[in-house]
Length: 253
Length: 248
Picture 1 (tube, rainbow over the protein chains, first blue to last red):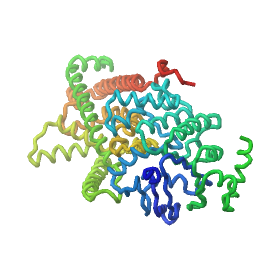
Picture 2 (cartoon, each protein chain N blue to C red):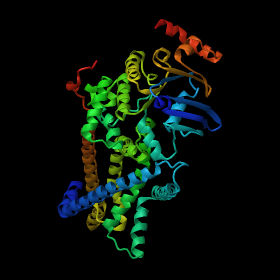
Picture 3 (cartoon, rainbow over the protein chains, first blue to last red):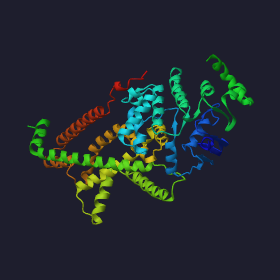
Picture 4 (tube, each protein chain N blue to C red):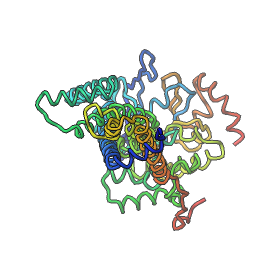
């Protein structure tokens, strides 16, 4: 029980500035095991920057991040170890263009976790199967569609067997037909009990799949609640305004 | 009766063909060895120059990279900022006067290597920049270190992008070796000069010389583009049917 209540990730007083422009303004929150947290908000509200600060792709200006109660240092060794446990999926996939699908899914396990080739391949295929991409192991990224690429990227992140995955607008670069296949994979992962933090513009997904939704505006967390409350009874006027634009789409679904 | 152009070309070739062949091979050796070594030097220099050093890095790393970067910067500036012919003179006679006795051949390779290295450094830097930043981030997100990501992901792609420029550099070098005759290395231009001087037949001798350079360059252009095509052809992939169970 104690384990359940303890947070996987805790963010304290997180501030990020680009020059004089403050993008994240003193954020505090924590993520518990098996939570699926969707972060919504308009463009420029700092959602992506938040994710990038968490796994160190952007250097935070101040604030602390705790992983299982332990403060994350700024050393590169520590950061790299943290990144093997908290994976990330990008809007632009970032699959390695010089490698096949299988090699993409084996690089992390063989080179970072130092797992044997056989074991790595077994793992890679296991997760590629899970996302329905196993038959494409010999393809190069440029030979795949956007949706396929993103599914491979998810499988690649899973091969590290992370405790938590960060998704940075995983469907924003996809055309509408391919959004579904990626969201389906993500829903599967959520149902499987993976802890996830997802920056998304897919309101339907946030409402139906997330266990918690965070609304960000202008660098602040404006609302942080279960999706039922956020989507049905938004308290904040900014949130109401934001949702109005999506309500039509939601009702149609 | 005045003897014609073809007669003299024939005559010079007959008398001097072993020298032309020898000169050709010296040219080839200098340009191949000098260029290859230059590629290596250029890669190292380019790598040092594109390694980011941030505020949080250790003091030791900052000092080491700071010094290396400065050395590389000076090296590139000097060798791109002076003519190769002058570099050859300075290095060859400079070494001679300071007691290091190297053959003109070795000096030629050294000069070509340094020259190629300086240009190559910039090419490599450009190649690294041309690779999407997301590739690095993709590696970082799996806990890969900067150097590991560079070597497994970014450099192979950068290399692919700069191959045409590398081929270009080799062809330029093949011709630029002619400048090295100033330090008395018996490459193709030097042997031609000797042959031409013997009979006072400059035009004919240099026609032969030009033809040999042209043949060499054309040969390597075709060979290298053939190799490039063969190596980097993107083959169609085959579906791994054994994993078709839950494919869409």
